[in-house]
Image 1 (tube, one colour):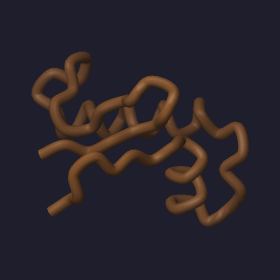
Image 2 (cartoon, helix red, strand yellow):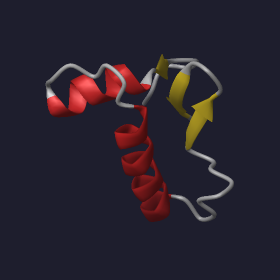
Image 3 (cartoon, helix red, strand yellow):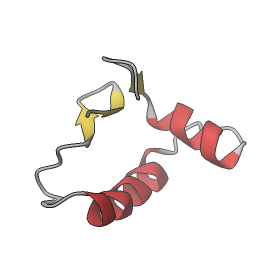
Image 4 (cartoon, one colour):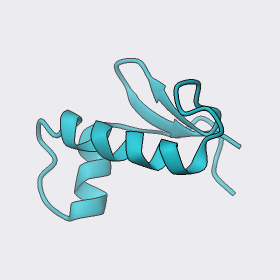
Length: 62
């Protein structure tokens, strides 16, 4: 479904979702990622599918 080891920075996520410049959009993206985790994860504080990669961005795991 998703390619292995593909990472998306907060700026890239912002640009692809809202179709506008994502410069310095970390907080906006983080809030939306948290809300998505609350819906898809069994334990949102220990995510299994939607993970943060420190200083890189986000990744989706199977």
